[in-house]
Length: 304
Image 1 (cartoon, rainbow, N blue to C red):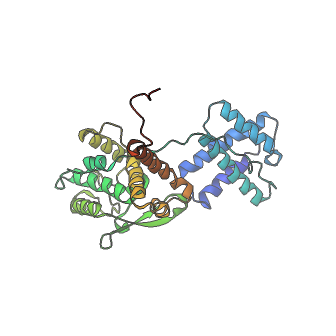
Image 2: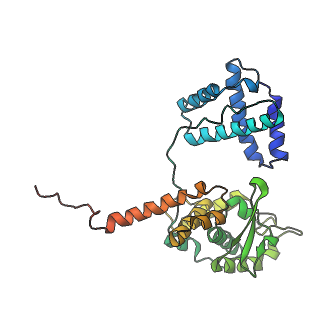
């Protein structure tokens, strides 16, 4: 296959679409695998690929045990590549356009209930710099539904303390969103900001910094949250994204406003946000089963 077009597409992803390096690597891995598959079948140019070839590739991946989600990601990479080839005049159609990945069960994200969140986040000492910083971090993730990459990427100028807002720069497509910050998180931020000048290196813009004075790393945030969860007696593995999932679930349970939750989370497609309706319905179904007189199972067998 014409490998130089893979190089051109990779440059296009970086310079025009401004995708993150990790996303570009996944695109390249998927397309390299597809190119090798085509070469094994004697195909030498991208325009010779047909829908049957793409279907055979998907079927082969399924036989190797790849999930529907992984195959869907690979097809998305292939469609994006062919849109580029069509634009450049090397292809006239996208052979992957009408190919769909097999359905797979969607795993529901893990969440904490409000009592678990309170047990995890309450009780730190705001006079201790590390505890104050960690409390501000985790309160902010839960308060505003931030991703781990977003919270460690925040700068001092992104926080509007007066109006209780924070500006979040998302990596994909560099799309900004402005989200509210709750009272608890603002109080925790105030406590951390009293310590920050003694920690931050000169000219450092990051909102959250480590002992070395530079921007705090994502791995450190993950490790310290797991340590905090153990100290607070949380019986399961906790990660920062679980706080984001909990934010979305609790907000949806209280408001029922899916569109608002979508905006706050920064989801481009509402279908991504709809996963939280499954969690909400799951909770409602449990309440129904336990409370409705016609739904409860009898403990004694029916008389014959």
